[in-house]
Length: 164
Image (tube, rainbow, N blue to C red):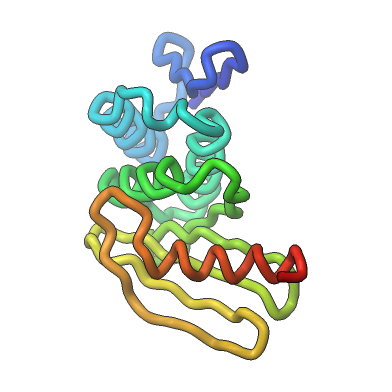
């Protein structure tokens, strides 16, 4: 599968005419990317770090498919929507795919300041965090806006870095 990310358009571009991959894995990934792109062909992703958001998701999905782990279109959409909804100055997380197909977003600032959010097909996001001496974990609903719980944890994670 070939994917080009053009800086001038700040969008990921899939070129099916030059995609020569024939495996079932390639076909499944191609279908997921195509469907997600069609459903979310709007400007929300390009608002901030557009190509970087999609690029991180696609790299994680591509790596997972090599290990026969598949991500659903709904999980991909939710991850893209959540990343797109983050405030502009929030650093983008590392993106990975768990063995069960959940997408993980990992903010790892140092040994005592980490936050991981797991995204699946459900509207509930799972999270775990270590911020200083506090261990936090649980679930939070996602309906398109950044959940208050996530905003709170990100503020604590990054305010700690500034010494506040």
